Length: 72
Image (cartoon, rainbow, N blue to C red; front, side):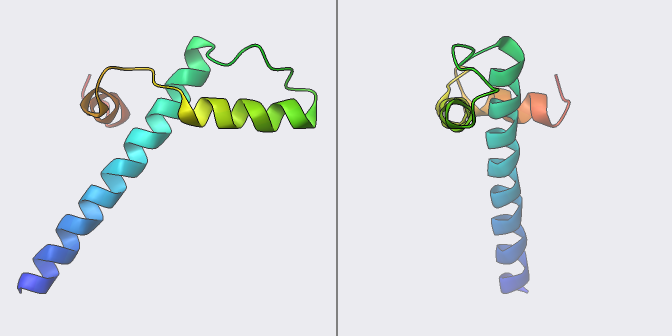
């Protein structure tokens, strides 16, 4: 029983982290972060993707989770 609960908790945390990462990426793209790159050039598109992945758009991960789950 304990292993099942532990597995579920780990799964929820892992999926929550994925939601936070994807919402951060989506919001960075929405607000136009990393817009200095030309998306028609393949090399600059790779740099833009890396920039969007590392962009910090909100002050806390909880905001990303709340927006990603459509709570706010």
